Length: 402
Ligand code: UDP
Image (cartoon, rainbow, N blue to C red):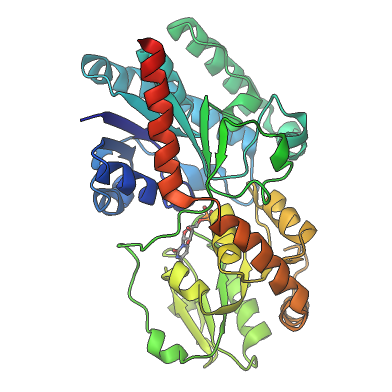
């Protein structure tokens, strides 16, 4: 039975799309060991994979509102420096047949090289490639934005990169490489047409679309209370969601809307401290997003790649309020393709947000554009195609090894 090691960062946005792929690989007889944080144990075990506790990668500390990518790059190399000696001895004694790693897990990429096994990159953001200049300005802009205030992080990054090269005789990682990790096979969870400059990526990038499938870990939700009418759904995702001020602003903006508003506010918000929500609101720390999307007239989102892909998959138009990380890029792409409007969070007020929502709701072209992109996402093949591509690639590698 082929053995697979899967390395990911402990973030819903990076984990959720991989779970149906892992379940499919397990169904096909592969034995997957998934390295992550305890919080994801149940969801991972439900796929049939073996969970392996891995040290925390403090994703939310480094992707907060300042969206400091240089600090994040430094953290990723620190994790890499700890992870290799912690994992290499056991993996060397019983090597996996291949490794799948998230594009933000340099340790997965390096372990694959040190073990000399095939590696596959799992890309839950837009794909980036240092070899494709057209894909890089987005990243360059973010790095430049934070460079001046991050000299100490940058110096630490370079010191770590040199240490890694010296210790393991691996190519010295450059800042851009950490975000543009790629392998001979890259599974990207969007469609080629939603990916900016999608046609410039070669065939090693397989755009399989979002992994839409039943989520066994989806929480209960009072769907009966919604009736048949389409809703306004609001979520800032799972990382950038500690924003009581924004949630109260939504109360003001939508208390008189003649439809239900469902708002996912995250587990760290004190619901009582938010005050009483208007009677047309339902608030929850975490909601069954895929089911709610199917009943949504519009989605107000932070622009997380998964949330946006999921909305487009169901043809839901968007109002995007990017907070950090890659969300500005995703928001720009939504606006460029006409599937929604972008609203800056600076000087945002209830009237501005309400205006954007009303305009998108009353202009059919937004929904039509979302439906067009949705068709490309639905045709991309999803997790079954991802599993096909992975198995085919591993077969090719085996053949080449003779
Ligand atoms: N999600 C969910 N219920 C919620 C909030 C989020 O199921 O109440 C899921 C959502 O479907 C998506 C993921 O969590 O798959 C969030 O990922 P995204 O990339 O959109 O944002 P992030 O949380 O990484 O900022």
